[in-house]
Image (cartoon, rainbow, N blue to C red):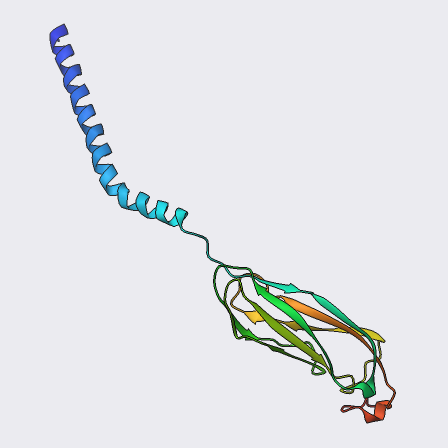
Length: 168
């Protein structure tokens, strides 16, 4: 092979390689463009979430009398997210406690009231001061938040007058 032939072949190879690279780059751009566009749209979209903030998280009734009747307190439930929260239920840890919420759907930026009631004449509790919980079941992200009430019951009517007296 002469120097001229080698030079021509090298030049031809360079042109072919350049053409292949140009084809890949231009063809690749049109193939990758929709995926890149979709990816950038997703990364620029706002992250949507819903989260409940409760205040206060606990309430202490202190010492109450069995004869005093049902006591209640309220908690503020704030939707701190960017989507509406749908309340699915507000179960309590014991039948002596009940709860109701003022809204079944809490729009973002809005507040609802969670009312928790405790019946000191429901059943006997031997532990002195104790607590009960209420959980807010919803479509909000993360764990279901809960509130806690503390109470100590003075059994002034007698254990036999309870709705569910202890079995002795």
